Image (tube, rainbow, N blue to C red):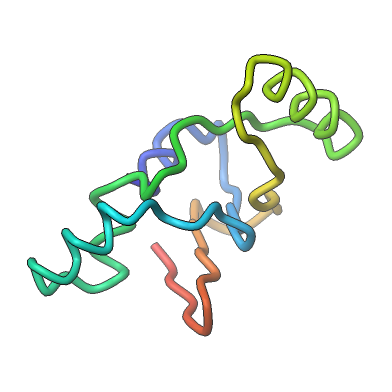
Length: 99
């Protein structure tokens, strides 16, 4: 799930993911049939975001171009900020989820 990234942080940082890919339809089916909230879905499943690379903003386009050379969709999905504790903030359509 999306929260897995928290265990790999080397210190206290806030991950803000505010430009995630649209989740594939299979996750909508799972959510509709399970009655799960977005909070639970994004905690349990990757929601279509299979790989994250953390780099300086200046190098983001280089990473995107490298992925696209292998026919892998890529985009900047968020940013990292200093924080008092480890935190993940998801900005979805009209909803903010904080872990």
